[in-house]
View (cartoon, helix red, strand yellow):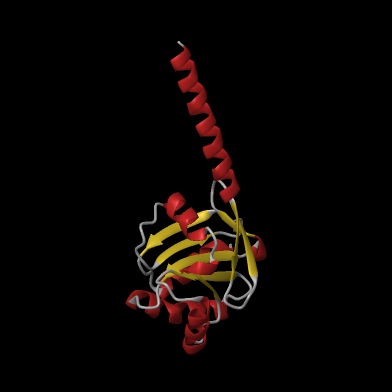
Length: 172
């Protein structure tokens, strides 16, 4: 009887610790390549980026050596310019560029949207990996509506027309 009670108490305490650790991860900060701090809160239905409340958010994990990722850059640049008041694109580089290397990459490619190196993304990558069951394939896109609710999780590249359709539908 004492062993059963001790086992139940141990399980209960482990569950409490586990839940406390999960709660801590629901608020994350990360630093962009231009030195700005972003604040994200995980909700039951999505991710809210405090700095982009009221905007559609494209959160993409990409790599600097990934051909589909490189092709997507032009699409994102055009969409960011066209929908700058409605759209925030946040791209996290996950193939190991340092922050300074990513800054050079951004400059070289003329990227006009938010970029974050994995080393400056805080716990964002493991958090999204756990929540979206992301296994590391890139590009990996999450589209969030104006409230931060997930509307699409897309492994692989989407054509620019599909991305634009999503923006137009979520803008209504």
